[in-house]
Length: 155
Image 1 (cartoon, rainbow, N blue to C red):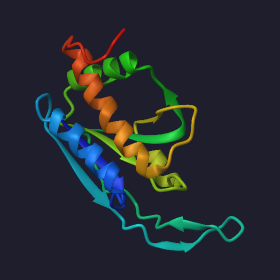
Image 2 (cartoon, one colour):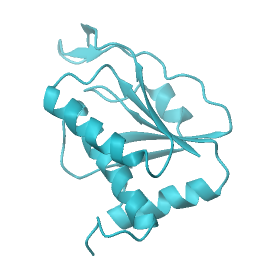
Image 3 (spheres, rainbow, N blue to C red):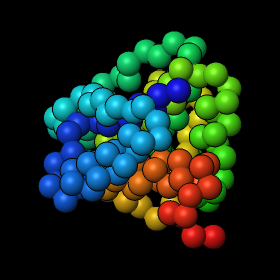
């Protein structure tokens, strides 16, 4: 199985790029993965009192060999160990790809939500959509070390 990280727009802050680079480099040891960028962060007038919204580009189509997960503040919450179990279970179900999609600052359009197999939240706290990328990559790396019984995660 391969992990695909689908991010809306490029990661802008250098420290986040560096952190994502550190964890994706570590992740290579465990599982094939790639980062895909969809929709540049173009702004357009929003529907809510003049707010700007990220461009609502639809996500690419995925076939039935991909398990698609969106990251959403209202999604299901996991401990790190439970997240590792979720990844391991998904790996064992024979999917070709496990796709994690992070949206822009204002989340996902409804059609994207309907295409996803699952919606998860990384925390009850709110993080910038840019920071979520680093947290997600670190948690995937942590999950791989938990699956392998390695000491990165302290129980």
